[in-house]
Image 1 (cartoon, one colour):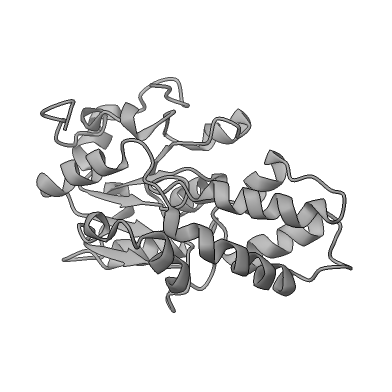
Image 2 (image 1 turned 30 degrees about the vertical axis):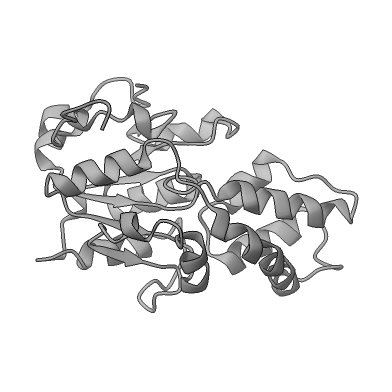
Length: 245
């Protein structure tokens, strides 16, 4: 376990305070980020340009139109391809890929463990409803364990990550909510998502893609290479009873 802050800052008081958990989805619970990369590489190849991880980092976690603007502007193709046209073209390619989405390692174990132990859990994602349904169609039973799901096209989510809207909306919808953000642990993979969680006032565990520059790690409270490495006891949550479950 790497703790990006070196010390375990008042870890005992934080441990006692975590009561609720919020999960991001893309790249954290579902292995969907690779589809975006694949499609964006194909589109850029037409303009003799390459897609790199510094650009990927700026796009990850944002609402689709915001990420699209970053894509066309940063690559210098905005005169040839508008953000809106890019999305239309990308959509066609993604529609066939999303239904094949696989779970990330450790996602099922952690969700089932928290649910079985009565820890309220939800999903807060920038993905809009149409894509959410495609991405989760093979995993409906697992996602049904969530107390609620907040999507990127939710009317209460005015701004995408790194604005805190999606996490603050999620905190409000738990039973008996709103839940104090200081009592919430967020799981994220994207730099913009980690910032959104911190802007909302929550604690955040980052599970980044290994290709992401580690300068993005420092904002998170804890950085893990996989959800399999998460130890609930670090955060005062019920420990795994059986490592194989």
